[in-house]
Length: 135
Image (tube, rainbow, N blue to C red):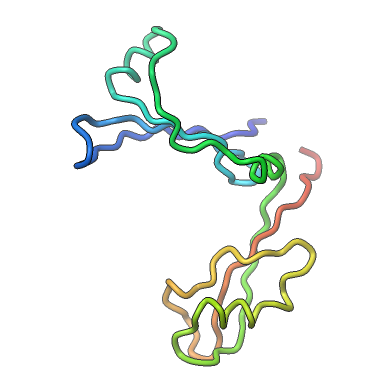
């Protein structure tokens, strides 16, 4: 069974003279990014046709905190809190979900940037990482 996901994307940018390829490797269980590199199309083409050691630029390298999550399973749950006003602030959401932040649960998305489906409740997303069973 695979334990990683690889994504290869072609990106063009107004900020650069050339298109480039972005290669990302993620941990399958935690969904955390391990590394992302970018390389020019010409160098990518040479690399996949057998020419090794082509130049690339690190765009992201995982931190020790992220490395500790590799191989763990990310669980997600929604927390509904009473609205104190129509447009909740991040601080109000953090106060409202404080009692939910136990057993490793942490705030992932406070929901302040998304349309809320309920006029009386505000929805936030919580995540935690747990050991994988049977993996």
